[in-house]
Image (cartoon, rainbow, N blue to C red; front, side):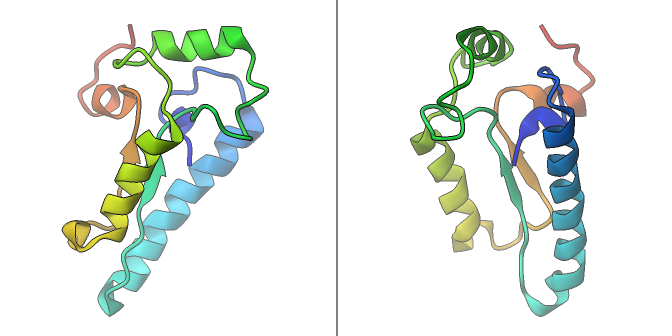
Length: 116
């Protein structure tokens, strides 16, 4: 999942469109499957580095992403693992249809704050 859906700071139109569909699909699945106890959530950490998917990301794109990130760094695979483990655990047993976002964009969008 990608948080480019919420804040498309990189012009990856086809990629962002596909990720938008996943958010909608997961919310619909959550609504359909909740009655039988199945939870469906998403994790949208932003760019994870180093990964095979991001190894060819240009340095200027990484720097631009970092400049829009509250923690001033790109997520590592270990940063992403924690939220995934949380969602897979019983600690999130009452969560469904949600998207956990990285960076700072989910907060900004919910609270109508302009990006820095």
